[in-house]
Amino acid sequence: MSNLSYLEVENLRHLIGSHDNAAHKLCSYAEQCTDPQIKQMFKQSSEEAKNTKQKLISFLG
Image 1: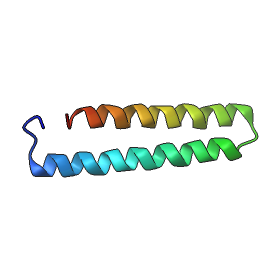
Image 2 (image 1 turned 120 degrees about the vertical axis):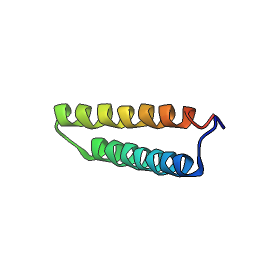
Image 3 (image 1 turned 60 degrees about the horizontal axis):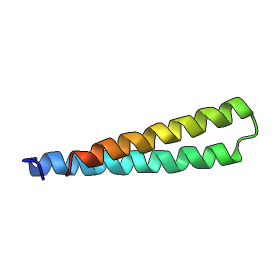
């Protein structure tokens, strides 16, 4: 780890979990959606949440 305090690691863990959860929910919403524009919005938001999760994970290594 890169000199992170216990509290910082715990905060990152919570943020990573939240973004992972959001990505899964948004992907599920996209699958259920029939309107193409809203479907695309959910897919894009899901990808952004996944990307943010990966960026947060990079702070741990």
